[in-house]
Length: 223
Image (cartoon, rainbow, N blue to C red; front, side):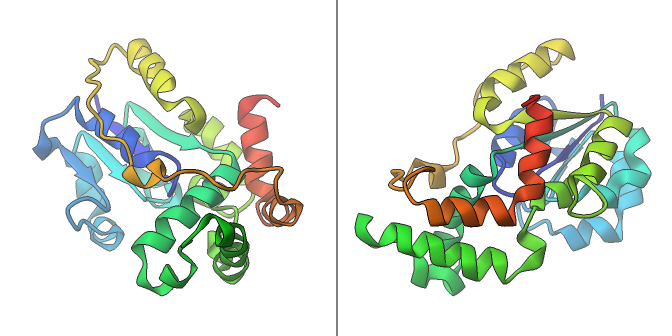
C-alpha cells in the first residue's frame, strides 16, 4: 500500500505521520520537515519520490502532489478548529522561532495580550498563513477549492480533536497494523491560559481572518 499524507501545519501532522510510518520500513518513507528534508528537495524530485516511496508525508500543499495522486492507494490529511490551530501556532512559533520570541508569554497576565498581538502581526501581516487549511488542501485559500479536491481525490480527513480514535478507525478499515507509539508533541503540553470565549476581541479576529477554514471545518464535521 502507498500512502500520501498532507500535513497542514499545527493540525496534528507529526502525530499522524509517526503512526503511518510505523507501517513501513524507514527506507520506504519520505517525510518533509523530518531529518532536514525540505519541501524544495521534494519538489525537485517529486516524480521519482512519489513513484519509489511507499509513504510520502509532511508539509506538502496538495496542489504540488495532485499530478501524482493516482499513484497512492490512500491520501490522508487532518483538519482543526481554527481557534485551536491559531493558539497552537502561537505556542509553538513563539517558543521555536527567534523572530517571535518577544511575544512568548512570560506570565499568565501577558498571555492574552501577546496572543492578540501575534494574531495581528503574524497572521494578518502574512496573507499566506490565513485560511491555511484551505490553502494546503485546495488550489487557493477558499473552502470550495479544498472541498472539491477532498471529494475528487477521496482524501481521508481526520479530526484533530479525536486523532487517536480517527486513526484507529482508519487503520482498521484499511486493515493496516497499528502501533501505538507515536510521541506526543511536547509544545502542546503547555498549560492553556487563554480559551475561546474569554476575550471577544481575540475570538472576533480569528473568526474574521479564518472564515474560510471555519467554513471548511464546519462542512467536514457536518455542522
